[in-house]
Image 1 (cartoon, helix red, strand yellow):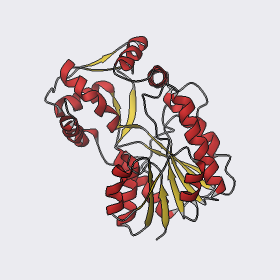
Image 2: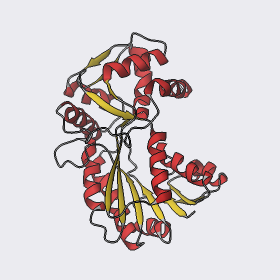
Image 3: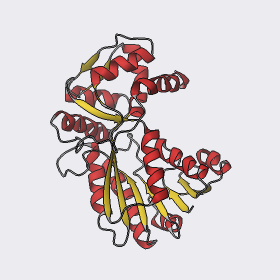
Image 4: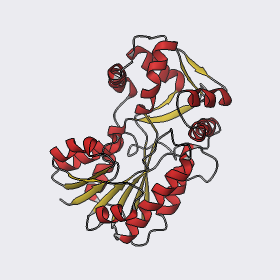
Length: 298
């Protein structure tokens, strides 16, 4: 057993990583911005540390003396300066890891993050991978998952009301998609075993690649619309719709650019393997998304 720090401990992967490690008997430092959201993790046995993830001093103290650290780039799609803020977060993480002399670090990244080409949202993770590779004496594991199933939760209300799923991804493009709990399981196992040296990469791809029409069919069945269609929309129209829904112009542009990158093959796996394939299927997970959507106040 060991002591492990989890950044973003109240998020989809961070919470699951924290709880898994606690069940295994590890000591966990759970980091986050809000005491209220962290409280349940404290009750579960974690050492809760509230602070600003751009504060290098706060992160350094939280990283110091532990066996491993789990990091990600917390973000908010309403940030008007999305790329600049994520860069500040990423720079703080790397500075703190260096100052604390972290031995093993698992970083949540994304498929496509190896590319320096325009990949929209993934560009921010490419930049973070570049920063992490500058660490000396730290063994870094870059986790590159596919698209999270949970990313469809914010659009389910619109799906129910409009009777269709819309995005910019071409209908014939199949995308690796994965449950965050499966990504968390891979991360927790790596944090526990610390079985790599230097900089390593592991893709986490879910059980199968899915096209957006397939996603529409699965989500439609879960919300009572089994014939739900998928409608691809022009890039500019999608960006305008996202801004109207509350996303910043910069974040909306990055989302659309990611869709273009998927269409043009700039974001793709290095090849599906058994090690990269995880068990949870969208068909099995969709009812959880539908239940979460129903719990959101209208």
